[in-house]
Length: 167
Image 1 (cartoon, one colour):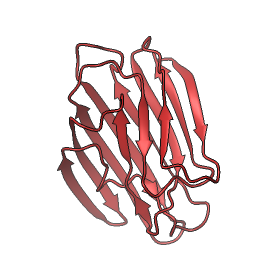
Image 2: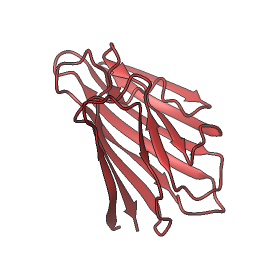
Image 3: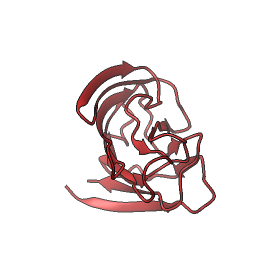
């Protein structure tokens, strides 16, 4: 397995509500997105929605996550990681970022639906810990050439997302 860096988005102080990679070449097997982020929500953790090729429809997902010593599971039929909450919010100790990875399999194929996995780890350097694993499918066979991560509260300064092609 070989990785090739496509690009990195480093967030400035403007609190952007979306982070988008466009014109993704379709000459590899999988996409691999690494993130370190926090949002401007007034809570400890926050949801992220993801949009593929401009579409937020046709998603199915199942999530497993833990908060401190409690565990949870859910299934959803949208693009919004409402329960998994893979981002630290603004009420977390300063400079504590959540991190993780989002993998999209066979992203360049035009004959298969797109399957993906997300795992993330949040810590507030105090009392709370959250980890989550989500697996899902986008019910579309189009090759993925654009990935957008969205949060209505805005991504905080020093958040970073890097995209890689996997051969």
